[in-house]
Image (cartoon, rainbow, N blue to C red; front, side, top):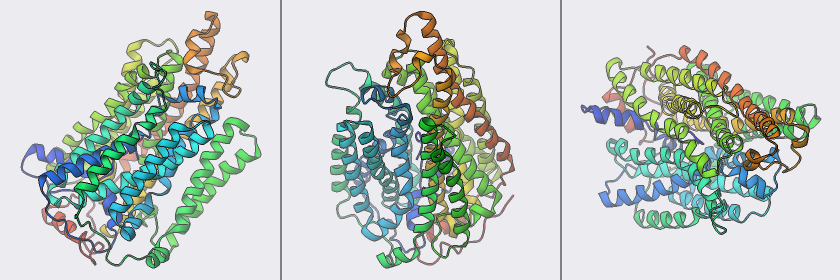
Amino acid sequence: MSLVNPARPPMPPHTPSCSSCSKAASAFSDTVHASDLASIDSHEVTKPQKHSLSRLLFVHIGAAMTLFLATTDSTIVSTSLPTIVSELHATQSQYTWVGVAYMLTQTACQPLYGRLSDLIGRKNVLYASMMIFALGSLLCGAAKSIMCLIIFRGLAGLGGGGIVSSVWVITSEIVEPHKRAKWSQALSITWSCSAIAGPILGGLFSTGFSATINWRWAFYMNLPVCLVAFLLLSLSLRNVTLGQAQHASWKSFAGKFDFLGLLLFMLGTSCLVIGFSFAMSNGWASPSTLLLVILGPVILICGGFYEVYTTREALFPPAAFKSLTVVIILTVTFLHNFAFTAGTFYLALYFQAVNGMTPLQAGVQMLPYSLGSSLASMPAAWFIGFWQQRKNDTSGQKWTIVGGLLVSTLGFGLMITLRDASPHIMQICFPLIAGIGVGLLFHAPYQVFVKALHPSQLATGTSAFFLVRFTGATIGLAVAGMVFDRQLSHALPIGYQIQGSSINWRLLSLIEPLSLRTEVLSAVALAIQSVWIVSAPLLGVALVISPFMKCFSVADTNHDANQEKTLHNKSCIGSPQPQNEV
């Protein structure tokens, strides 16, 4: 998930109330409850109990704290990476791996968390994930080499993925269904704040205003917050019975879970990511690069065929390969997170390397992009709620997606014009337009996605949706790093070719003489421009295919009630009638 994530977990539709405010709130949180569906699957679960307001409040405070850490950690290194690379003497090919390692492991285990929570309990999965995340953060702060940092970031990603999944499951299970929309708002706001806070916090700790406080504290700060959140959650969840599958067993897990499908999907993704990394250091003509870049898509295609015919609980629902709308939504989701994550990391590098800003200044300068993407989802939710009431279908979501892709394509296209001496107003407005565009795409795709699936495929579809979303972010960052490195190696003057850690990004603006400085900064700006040149057309492809999505009728009050009921009964997740296309 998101930076980023950029990805917020969804929730099943709620019946609109007569108040316009509650309609918008319901629409805004319509995509905040997916992980619990993924873990519910077709098993019998316990009906939500009534809990006191104080208990719900403390649970949500603890959950928000852990969710903030897990989601912020994916973007907190965006502004501190130039400092980290310089201090740990990293190569440019290792630049993106500090971010990729966290996202890759966070993605890899997403399908497992729900099944494990059925076997060992929701709370145990959450607490274990928090401990793994805290341990990974501690080791990241103490890392003495770039390779150690990358490995420990992967460990933290394992815990972060479990936190994101478990938090939404637990908070949804302790809240009565008709109140979930209201309580999920706090977690949705937390997710939005993390997109804003990540670059700023990373910049704050990397500015170097103190000999003691440095980039390592961006990881160390997770420890006390994790401890406080753990105490809050363990106390407030004491004696609380959470839903758990009645027929779950390790034998059933081993017999039904799609281990081979997950292995093929992650192996193909990893081949692509590592192949792009090898392209940075060894070049495209290298046998290792060609082998991995070719092998990755082949493995993914084989995985797709396997998913269609497997008798196990497939990672992807059949509709993912048969329904045009589902294919379009998954493609849009992948490309959206590809561009959003690449934009988060390389916009931060642009402000530091080209403008000579400190990490903190770069974090503040990124506010139009990160804040715009976070706030844009609010008016989108109001529009969807208003349009959904009028039309009683998903046409509002469809045109929100089309509009978001149009604006984001325009924004990334305009960022292509940014140079080393671009006016300050352009550096504010163009990222703002791009941020607003990607922000419009945070919620609406999932709302169309769940309507395109038969209810029996909802749990599997949700896992697939998040798998594609996180994979888009991971691949996007890897490709952006490869494109940037390739362009920079050709554009830099001979004396400033990248060799190991020879470039200190923050000091480029101090190069003398002025003519050489101008040439170097222009080369870096062109290399970052190549990231936008890749991202903009990909968003354009998503824009071209998005109008072909079908519109689906929105479930009425009775259907919502029935759907909510079936999610809490043993036999009926697959029994409601199929969605009607408009």
